[in-house]
Length: 262
Image (tube, rainbow, N blue to C red; front, side, top):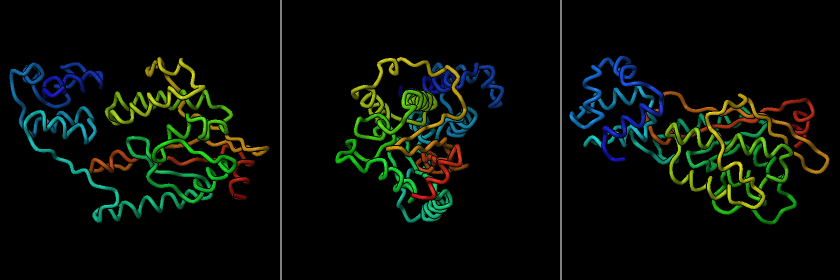
C-alpha cells in the first residue's frame, strides 16, 4: 500500500483503534482524520509524525508513511559497525559480558544473529560438537531452531518452543517489526523435514505463557533455560530500534552449575 490514507487506516486497524479513539489521542478532529484516510485531505509532515507516534508505528514504517505522503524520511538507518554507533556497540558488549556464564545474543529484524557472548559460543559449540554440517545461510535463530542440522535435536521440548517462535514472528509482522525476508525465512523453516504442518495455521491472537522454557539435552547433560528479550529504549535510528537482545537464564541449580563448568 503506497497511499498514505490506506497506510494510516492499516495501522489504526493493527492497533485496534477506532477513528474516534485515534482522533482523540492525537488531538485532531475525527472529520480531518476521516479525510486523511479517504484521501480527501493531505497530511502535513508534522501530522504524519504525530499520528505515527500515537499509533506506535516502528521507525522504519514511519519513514514509509512520510514517503507515502511525499516527504523525506525522518530516521536514519545506520550500519551497526558505523563510527557513530560506537557507544551503542560498547553498551551491547557490556550487556553480553554481564550475562556470563549464561548465553546471550543480539538479533536483527531478520532474526540474524549479530553478536553473541562467549557463553553462547561455548554452549552452542558444545551442542554441535558431533555434527559436521550447519543450517544454510548466515547464523539465524529460526534456521538454527528448525533445521534438522541445527539445535532442534537437542531441544527436548521442541514442539512447545517452535510454536512460541512462530507466534512471535507472526505477532511482530502484525506490529510492523519484521519484513518480507523474515517472512520468507519463516516459510522456509516451516518446510523443513519433520516440522508439523499445524504450525502454518497458528492463531497468533491466542494468549501464550509469558515465559516459555527451553530445555536442552546433550548426552546425559541437561540445561533448562528461559529467556528474556530486551530492546533499546527511545532509539532514533531504525537499525537500533530493530535490535533485540536475548538473554538466557537458568531455571535450576543443575543448569547453573553446568553453565559454570562449561
